[in-house]
Length: 270
Image 1 (cartoon, rainbow, N blue to C red):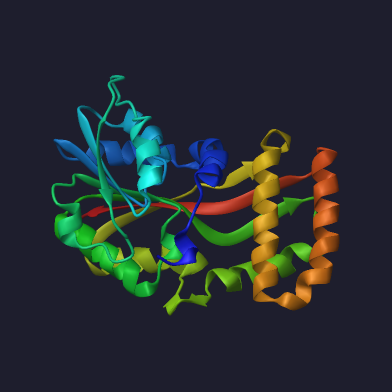
Image 2 (image 1 turned 180 degrees about the horizontal axis):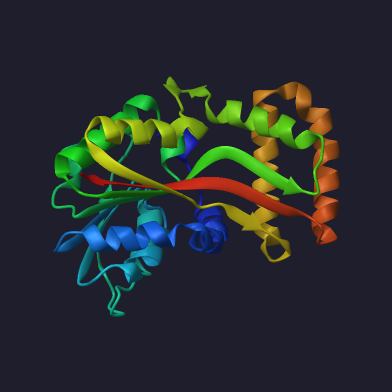
């Protein structure tokens, strides 16, 4: 497993509320209208199960969720807090410990819906094509949420914003361990792949909008965003220190607002 899709339970917990606020309810309701029965949802890169807990109430029961993740500790945490279906009944959980970079149709056997959250942008072209092919072969509608688009807006403006954004986006497209990541190009690439297969696609914005109440998440995100930019362009190090000092002071003074833009994608057979 490469470092690009290593995540900690602490980070997943920290972002869970912002994720829940940001995901597209419109696409969730659309997925609920077309999901087949029995409702068997395969969640790729499920982590601690936040997608399950958010989406399950939109879907009829009974539900089975097959959670795919390489990290058995995260899967155990997810299984300890199952989602509730639209009637308030706990869903049944099946855990599948495996790497999901090259998902195959047999991994999705029996799926009536496939989901993933914050996954597309850390995959390569070949990996997204393999995922799309598996979903198309299975015939299950696919809801992919919270993929980064590369756009970040901070208020008040700062001359460093666009510089660090560009460096971060280059970092998202880097080659690591022989894998060239799609980063902010992932959503457009996935849409094209589904459309080539004759599927219908719908897209909705799912941006984080972080204010004073989100300070712990905003601080963690900001530090990671700038660190990734500096890793890509080490010449930014001195500027980064000054930039972070300014932005953290603005957080303390409750002045800073952050919008981190994502997109949700629902693909289904035509």
